[in-house]
Image (tube, rainbow, N blue to C red):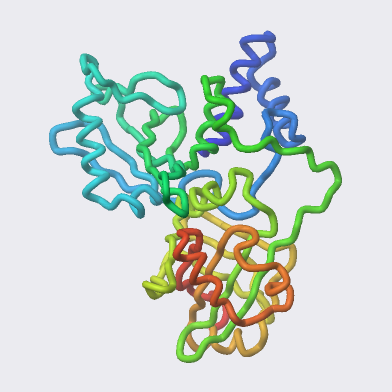
Length: 335
């Protein structure tokens, strides 16, 4: 169950208890208010991504009975050894008589590893500004959750704070993302994309969000990590192969319909199929793949994207700032 769905169900239970409504009626009201932007402050829905973490790996310590599920992005940032160290920490501090208990971030109750069949482990990302440094430094904090509180993921600090507030937990108001104004009938800003055909390599498909993320660039980074898209620094690494991801070509092979992840579903679908140049489609057919890249709004000047310029050298700086994501994906339907 995704964190959003769990939050709506929790809100419905509270409302049913407070008003005497049936749970089903309260859930219908809560969902309607959420869609209308009246529930909480977040009427903003990202067009990219999944409701919950795209993947998780299980680790079960040899001395324990509890299984630990790690969000994909947590594995990407910390690595297997550090994640196993977190599980060992929980095995020690999740005992009923432990002094420094492991606390669930989505209910504020202790996690008892002698009773819980599953514990979910994610990360919260928070930027701090070290004195004298030109740019903020990213701090990473483990996020523990009960299985019944919802699967974990990578969060920005603002996203985690907002989710806690939705569940009626105490938060620092200053940690919440900026308040969203209701959109009314305004059409959302379009997302931008560019197709390029480098020599001797798969073609490149770059997709940039047209709207700033609700929780800022750090929220965009947390979402992409949770989706299972790896960060990519083009100045240091070649795009890795992502066998579970694919870009679907339209049935008539004139365009591209959507991007999906096997086992999770469609990650992004444009209002109408993308129409890459014939040379791009020919290169994708030859390589049977393409390099897909994505970054937050305004990473590359809009004028350059609108012109369809093929020079994406600015992505080198975006990657060095840990805000470029993607890899080599199969292009399905061109065979």
